[in-house]
Length: 294
Image (tube, one colour):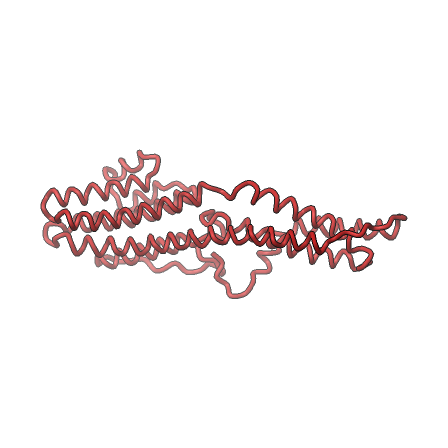
């Protein structure tokens, strides 16, 4: 996630310079043809076209931002649920007999959020599984298609084992289970965002109409702007291309790009809080790298 207070002009230019260069060349061709060839540029209702396109792109950008913000809200819920799970198991499980189980559940939750991060970013979760879990603990989860869900299932079985031993009662088990349900619901929402793209109409038609508008723009402006047509048309086209690009950047909040939700930083926050709850040394919070928080 870009956290600089000002615009990153270099980043913006790197993403749109190719279509802008093509647009500028086309503007020069139209302007040169207007003066060198005997043709009359048709009068085009560019204001009407531009207004309709702006509304279309606005709806698309809003939909993309809603997906990005929903991803951030879901991870905020995951942070809260992880803290609550840690506090609950330390409160309910006895310190004498259940100390090892407290530690195992909390370390499993740290593993779970990091594995979920890897799954959403299409990365190999195995290194994260092996950080805190023994080979015997890791094997059942790694055998599952959804490794994160396997880790959470194992946590649920350990809670049930604590009830069977008489360490917690059924009311306490139900309270912990509600937290696991909240965690599962948050994971399901994240997977829905990751696996369900915007409808094809939201992806295909805005790009088609934007490029068509950029092609028509110098033809409709050349009689008014004359030699300034390449500059005016390119600047106007850049606005529409930038809005189009913004929608592309935000539509997948877990794409592991500079624009996505900072999953690594939030997983580190959970890890710090839960390790400190155990009294273990915790790593430092993640810092931005060149204005980007991963």
